[in-house]
Length: 370
Image (cartoon, rainbow, N blue to C red; front, side, top):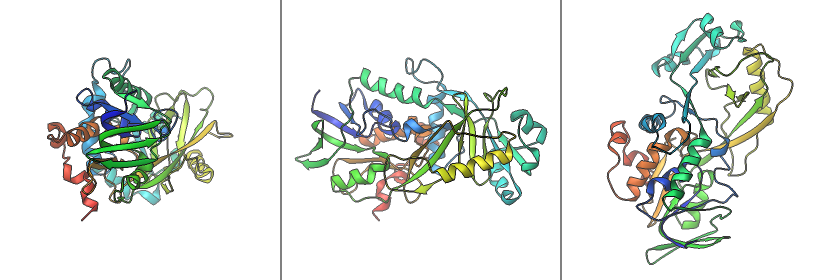
């Protein structure tokens, strides 16, 4: 393996992998991952949906700009579709009726109880006051997407080194040296795509942190009711994001939609939150759950204003931020990687990204240095 590159990307999740692939073959790229395999943390634990109306303004713009890639990826990128139909359903109880208007503004439409029962045959009609639905939501095959970026990177000559956490960053004479247990590597540009550990990587570089906050989200898999076809169930959530559930690999994935601030770590599910989500699920569905097949948790990383942090650090030369995707990193990765690559190379942002409403200033780390 070479030890000298144009760009070193720290973090091999969806953010780092998509950017590294986008930079090839114009630049030599090394991607460093602290775990034994790429995508171990949030990327590998995501049940992502493509929802263009979900998230803050810049997230929605980047998601819309990613639509073309998801629906028609480059030739050879994947051997199956990246998206599959799912739809999203909101069940609104009396306590959250005020939130229905906001959902309608995002494109969800009121549907009848009969239509809800067609979508969810075992739903309890007495458990909600009204329901809204949007058929446009689609499942993302996260592993297929991530592996596509990794394959694209390697085919173009990029390199990936796992089990290589950055333990030191030193900048001298226009070059960074990254110290890892796998050896030392040099590059002109360091990309901080370390997810929940991004502020920790910034400290190694002597950069000012931006106040990124990892937040835990728990999930569980349960077996479906015997004899019930769940394959076409929509993503279903309670108004106020009190919980959600959807089919996943022949099981039902249930989450309390928790967002508990935590320190960066190998996250585990909050059993109490899972229990609360199961209770809400059973309140809405005629399905008694007696055991959990599997539980897990991921960390979603948020900047103070909820928008991504993408761009060169204003004070530390050659140090580039790609962080703070806030749980939307999968659905924004095609557009965000192209945006980041343009900024790294000091070229104009892609025209379609600009047309959707994204600007370099809105996502720049400079906004935290006023």
